[in-house]
Image 1 (cartoon, rainbow, N blue to C red):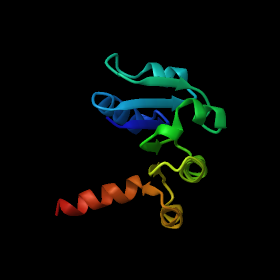
Image 2 (image 1 turned 90 degrees about the horizontal axis):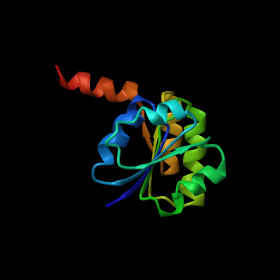
Image 3 (image 1 turned 45 degrees about the vertical axis):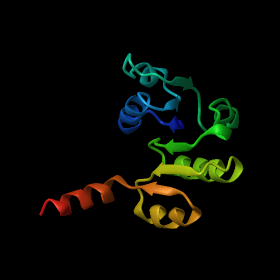
Length: 130
């Protein structure tokens, strides 16, 4: 069983958290209590209502023990900064970021971070439909 942290419980974060919690140890961090409370009743993980920019929040989430961290907030810069901190300070092997700006995607993928760009992914899927 893997230990996974999801920072940002947007639509994507919510679906990922609910799906993974069936088989993995999952911690979800979000600054909106309403969003955390919207997770399904069968969500089998831990919820942390806090700001991800606070290093104490990252510590509380158990980042040192994490196998993977997903940064899925709607803020590219927050995702990128926290991704670099988590990768360097906590040496988490798998750090995955949601980034909307394709220029930032190219720059930061060189940092050892896995960058996911929604527009790029949708474009690739659509091309396969031809």
